[in-house]
Amino acid sequence: MNLPSNSKIAQRIAANLLVSIHPVVRVHPETGERALYVNPGFTSHILVVIRQESDLLLELFFNQITKSAYTTRLRWNNGDIAFWDNRATSHLAPQDLDHLEVERVLYRTTITGDVPVGPDGFRSQVVEGEAFNSELPTILKNKAEKLETEPVLS
Image 1 (cartoon, rainbow, N blue to C red):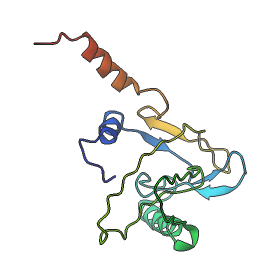
Image 2: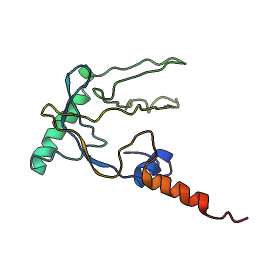
Image 3: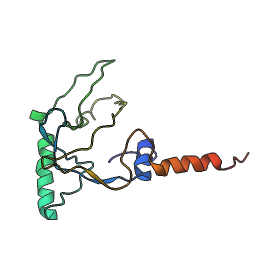
């Protein structure tokens, strides 16, 4: 991900590096629809095929999820708010705004969701780290507790 290393989100990700195995296709828990569950920022490879095949498949999938036929572009006005369902949607920031002298400010809130499930019933599994939820990961809680118990030098 292209985040400043001193940003709060980059520090939180680094403190709790999360490695998971997800289905490539997930079933939406409310509609039953199937959707690709890959993302160029987080998906590194597909486990059940050799690396070369994985790279080719992911290139195909990443190209599919960014095709203009499957995208929506908003013409923003002051006060606008947008919502999307991350269970069946990818967010891609505009790549063609460099020529404009505008500041893009985004405040993002993510609602804790369900565990992704594939058409075969496979449920996402955390391999390393702690899944993000409304609670701080244990490693960050421990750091906060340590700071509270350390004497403050004046």
